[in-house]
Length: 300
Figure 1 (cartoon, rainbow, N blue to C red):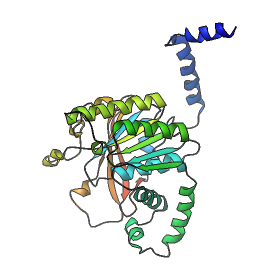
Figure 2 (spheres, rainbow, N blue to C red; figure 1 turned 45 degrees about the vertical axis):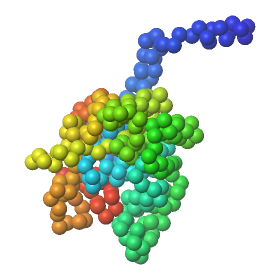
Figure 3 (cartoon, rainbow, N blue to C red; figure 1 turned 90 degrees about the vertical axis):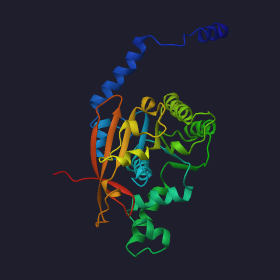
Figure 4 (tube, rainbow, N blue to C red; figure 1 turned 135 degrees about the horizontal axis):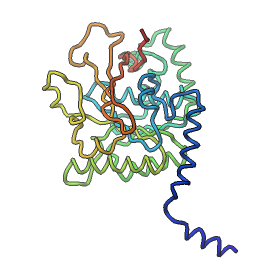
């Protein structure tokens, strides 16, 4: 009997009849229909962006790109707080940084969650008003399922093993990689190396059933244009990044080029330049530079 069972397992085809896949699809469709929420994936925390994307889905490679100082890392960490803390029952988040220490990442998470000026925190000039906010935020962050790893010069194979470990050990739902151009590659052509990284991360997202948020720089040549909003062609050393990504989000803040005297709140544009399964468009957010926090704008 056992020999027959083993034989049946060995002879199971490595593919599925469409009727079996259809059953799973119907169950998901029914679940979405019955859910009071419009978000089926991991929520970014930004209402208009989530309405446009439906949240980040398992298997998605999401590229967040922009020029330096636009807020790519801040946006990604805000999303980490949303998925792991603000949204109930979504799941753990992994953060892999190639440019910051784990302490620096944690401080940014903390200040965004508390709404506290990060420069005051780093210089030790906190006010009496700051401390209660920090204490409350620290408690929430302490209990959160966020896992962080600082790994400068992390090679692709080691990155893949690290993400697999986060999935196996912590069952992460979403992993942030900050950022693409800091990863070394063995290929002679940098473009080929970038292509191999993006293609591998897309395959890993599908294999593990997670969302991967990959941060990327864009070409500085866009600054020669009158309109400096990034386009898909501006992805730096892009290779196949544009093709591999399910969603491409560009972060743009006009004040980076034309500074304002108002340092309390600015405006940010999240340009949805590509979405494999949905519409493209523009999402307007507020940005609080003191705490590196992107916020929803009030509706008119």
